[in-house]
Image (cartoon, rainbow, N blue to C red; front, side):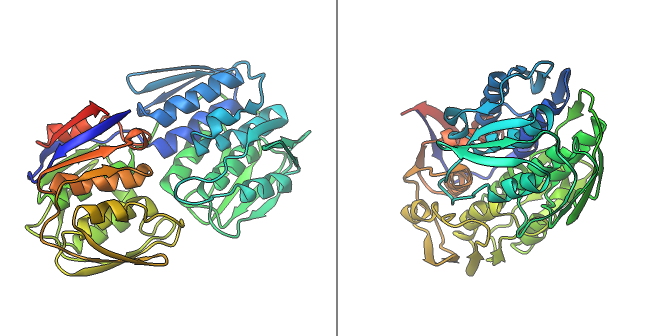
Length: 417
């Protein structure tokens, strides 16, 4: 396994090009199952999760090739309808093939994803939606088996917004007979990107990005040519790095409109932003000011930026309160930050962070994707040397992060453990 070794304390300056959004690429890759033929996706990041989804697509019978951020998927013949445990267990987004497989083949068999480091995240809402569309569901030795002779439109209400649940039902509904209403739908930009991709394939969808999505089923879809949106969480992570190092970083290939909640919160810390088209210049202050926040579904402050903000608050002037409302167990980075000298106390889903004057490098262990990012944010500002182990978590969501940090002047190298 690899580890990152960082010698912090430098002001980071320069330009970074943000990669395509993993959380948009994965559902759109799954969506290509809906139409026979060759699909071409651009701005696809080279990440562990994308490779895993590619292996799953190949297992189902699709051709998959990724070169220079361009993915080609040939879904002419999809004969297998099973997503096996060894793939689903390493990447929960594998469950996104459920909707497309049932819509195209009339059946799907997908291993239950189970829990993960940041909470259980069950798929009961996915299954409820598919049942409303006319599917029958059975459990078989740790697998969920979904069958439907013909899906039919229905009104589906989610008790709570679910991103992958909304995406799965959206993909199933586009080939269902009649009209489907998805109420209390997730509003994330990645859901909108999936809807835009489906529309480009010939689907009839209204309301993506709002709480009610309307889908009019069509008989068939056509192959896709599409560019994936930029990754808003990678963008936010580099904003945090600019803030904590007092840096001056320009981010290219961005969507500022996807980051309103993050930018507004970071402005309150004393950071400055210069927006110009698809570029954002981010300037950090001499010392950050403490801010408090509560994670919420989009368009609120994203749970995927909570850990990075906490790292910033470790060095901010004053005390901040961070409340995590989306996932349980999403404070697993706190113990590692405290090893660096951070002053953090946890009570339930609320963290109180009292800013200190300095963090000190230490050997650290990553526990999940965003926790990994928070440790990198802290390490680039800490005095001395920090080593971060288990960075395979980081490689699931950040493309060439050490190269991008090196281009900004960071002292960071990847080593074998």
